[in-house]
Picture 1 (cartoon, rainbow, N blue to C red):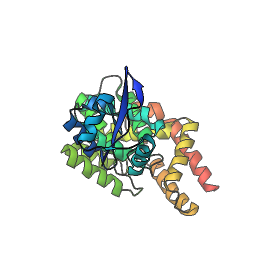
Picture 2: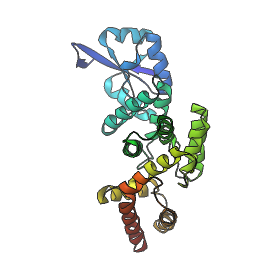
Picture 3: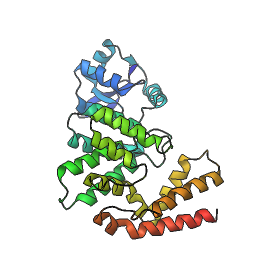
Length: 287
């Protein structure tokens, strides 16, 4: 259902209403387009419409509600964007549209997926951090554009499906990438993140692996926050069972010939990553 609150928000010499859906962003975009409201008015979970269009929205079928009730309905739908996430999500959305101009439908779907409420670590900040890591890996301009773009698309999709089940999550994320993009290379890159064993024949594979693992080489404070976030995502798993599973993950990573597949990744993160991993293993051993 499309909902609209009274014009009560002042800006640019007029009052503005919020136009939302309590069902889906696709429904909201279709309604706004039929009203002639462009995408520039969309702000992650709502459209801002001027007071002069409030009556038009109601005449077109939007249900008028007070601001408080509209907010409650939006929260109940799962589409509400929390204030603390808005800046990150806006930056992510702008970045996607630079990569794929006018592909609003895909980025809207991806951002809804990335901010699912059960995600504590594998959320928008993780996506933003992996993309920032990719920038650091490719900042000298030596990586061909095709390889860089393929790596960036793979990072957008690599945790698009996340239910805490490896490799099923990666397989489902790869399938989603293939359905949406029709790009087998990107799907293969996504699938690689299940075990982080990059394909030596594809330069983008090393970039994706290193960007996803960059968190392991974070400073001590961020790494410890990351471990708490991961534990929160598995809050229903008993402590001993979690420790066993987590140790297996850390030992698998430490058993790789190299944590990072690129020279730049090794220079940036390898030493600190091994310190962090060994420190966490020690903490797990002492409970």
